[in-house]
Image (cartoon, rainbow, N blue to C red; front, side, top):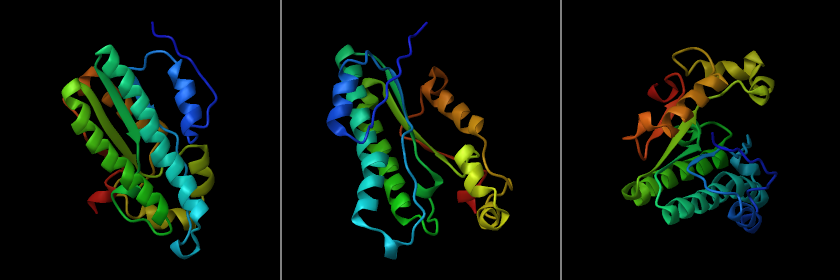
Length: 194
């Protein structure tokens, strides 16, 4: 049985993350789930907005992945990494310009890391969910007026549930997905097919 260690850490702090993960023990499976969203018109976006979104959504993900991969390579073990991206990387969403850009970077990084580390049997994939009904998702998307335009673009006519994302993540981490590498998997009820 594998041990699970939890730690409180601001992964957007590059150096603090390096220090914390240095002594964290071996990592063979990694889910990069830390992230932040923003709904804001491009004309009102500030430099701080861009920095805060890219620091967490992109820079932190790159750093944590780098540290995990270094450990896997040093130990000569296979591994699997799943990045939590978004349908916002695959389709423009109104008011999400900076967020869309950050998730597009996540997908590009996913493909490049998969290419670089696939020969070492380290797989890197992403999942790209639509609106997921987390507590925060329910709070924001429970308003039918706000939800309708997004829901109208989803052929399954509903938002996703947390288990629909976690099931896909667990599959990609598992040996059942041993030939899947560099994939950005939409979990969107068909949103990007429209």
